[in-house]
Image (cartoon, rainbow, N blue to C red):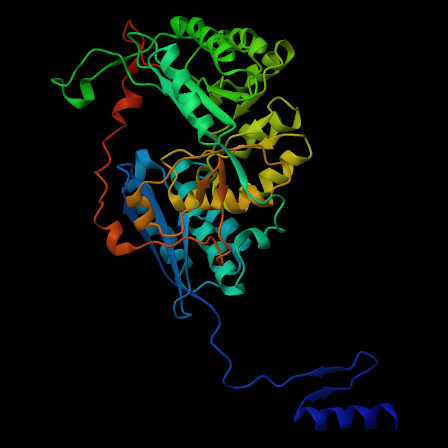
Length: 446
């Protein structure tokens, strides 16, 4: 049987394949059935604003023309929730209707440049909500949990840290012991400074409840704080020992030169990391800090623009990257950031406070599971209301986050229940951050 006879027989056997026989690269081209399913398309994009734990959350839902197939993404910029809602509903939605939701990279890139002005927190969070939802759709459509699409597990569960604060040395130590008893191995510690509005601990400023909200001043002075923090760590090392990993967040609140001195003063207490010693505007100080101190440094929750962090990574000036994933645009850029960090021995420590929705926490943990250079994950225990509104929250047990093997992000949203927890309207500016001032009345960074 010659080649042409063989091809003719093959066509007959398959019930009607057309043959292209022009030259040596002849191909069998299947005739597509006329009843082929319509191409997958985005049919709707909407925002759901809810506050089951009292914190304004923004979640994006992307719906498709495949019955029951939709995705969820976190777009939470809690201080400007309504601005993100507008960016999604008025601008991204009409841009995305009719597009193929599996073209995740193309949609991210085109959405990023669609406003011309870019790298801002409002647009980045709006894009993030869509981006996470598209990854969720892809996972559901393939029947795979998201971490499998990222290359599979690098670990079985995700190690986490919790926050122990208090008004005194003794109360902080007591809260650290409580977390150790619950199985946590890493604890971030913060202590109030008397008379000051201290980050991470209950404010001790005078009662101003009779003042209008926009006139209430939160007083902060850096010098008493930098004197108190080493005393806290000295006390804790004597009380709880060396086995626990201790962390601390400066929260960009002090002048850079004081931050450098603080990092040096904390060296004897072997921190797991010192977070945000500088503001994003002061990243030029990192080279001076690295030359003078071996205290591990975490940085990044306020970053929006890759130019803010690529130099710090490349020059090995930080040890942990702390970005808020929705703030930089979602899972697509976060995966690239994690890969970049791997080459420079920088570990991930994604931002994970209450103003990340449970959907965002699920995204964090899926990325953590599949990232070889994972460091630690900030964690929180979800309230019963959050678990009802967001069935499928990551499980926090024995100090680890555990994921289910459900497809996609593995988390859902009950819109009916979410509507029972409406958000308060955003203030014209955030009252707490905007009214933090030095004792002489000077506005200062939060």
